[in-house]
Image 1 (cartoon, rainbow, N blue to C red):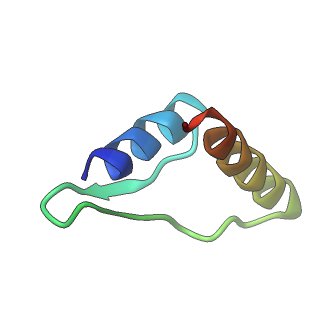
Image 2: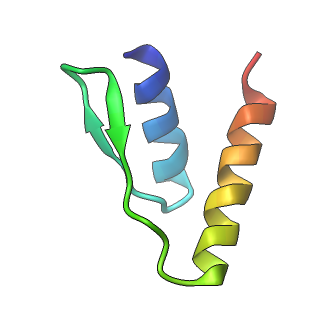
Image 3: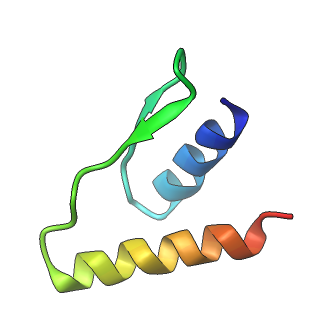
Length: 53
Protein backbone atom coordinates (compact mmCIF):
# COMPACT_ATOMS: atom_id res chain seq x y z
CA UNK A 1 0.00 0.00 0.00
CA UNK A 2 2.78 2.42 0.88
CA UNK A 3 4.51 2.05 -2.50
CA UNK A 4 1.24 2.57 -4.38
CA UNK A 5 0.51 5.72 -2.37
CA UNK A 6 4.05 7.03 -2.94
CA UNK A 7 3.83 6.48 -6.70
CA UNK A 8 0.36 8.05 -6.75
CA UNK A 9 1.67 11.21 -5.05
CA UNK A 10 4.82 11.30 -7.20
CA UNK A 11 2.84 11.15 -10.43
CA UNK A 12 0.27 13.69 -9.21
CA UNK A 13 3.07 16.20 -8.61
CA UNK A 14 3.91 15.78 -12.30
CA UNK A 15 0.31 16.22 -13.42
CA UNK A 16 -0.18 12.52 -14.19
CA UNK A 17 -3.29 11.28 -12.50
CA UNK A 18 -3.62 7.71 -11.30
CA UNK A 19 -6.48 6.15 -9.40
CA UNK A 20 -5.40 4.78 -6.03
CA UNK A 21 -7.25 1.78 -4.62
CA UNK A 22 -6.00 2.11 -1.05
CA UNK A 23 -7.89 -0.95 0.21
CA UNK A 24 -6.13 -3.08 -2.41
CA UNK A 25 -2.78 -1.29 -2.44
CA UNK A 26 -2.99 -0.87 -6.20
CA UNK A 27 -3.20 1.78 -8.90
CA UNK A 28 -5.01 2.20 -12.19
CA UNK A 29 -4.00 4.48 -15.02
CA UNK A 30 -5.41 5.26 -18.42
CA UNK A 31 -3.42 4.76 -21.58
CA UNK A 32 -1.78 7.92 -22.92
CA UNK A 33 -3.48 9.38 -25.99
CA UNK A 34 -0.45 10.70 -27.87
CA UNK A 35 3.22 9.89 -28.34
CA UNK A 36 4.09 12.96 -26.27
CA UNK A 37 1.90 11.67 -23.44
CA UNK A 38 3.61 8.28 -23.62
CA UNK A 39 7.02 9.95 -23.42
CA UNK A 40 5.88 11.98 -20.41
CA UNK A 41 4.65 8.84 -18.65
CA UNK A 42 7.82 6.90 -19.43
CA UNK A 43 10.00 9.77 -18.20
CA UNK A 44 8.02 10.12 -14.98
CA UNK A 45 8.23 6.37 -14.28
CA UNK A 46 11.97 6.44 -14.98
CA UNK A 47 12.41 9.40 -12.63
CA UNK A 48 10.44 7.58 -9.93
CA UNK A 49 12.56 4.45 -10.32
CA UNK A 50 15.78 6.49 -9.98
CA UNK A 51 14.56 8.16 -6.79
CA UNK A 52 13.64 4.91 -5.03
CA UNK A 53 16.33 3.27 -2.86
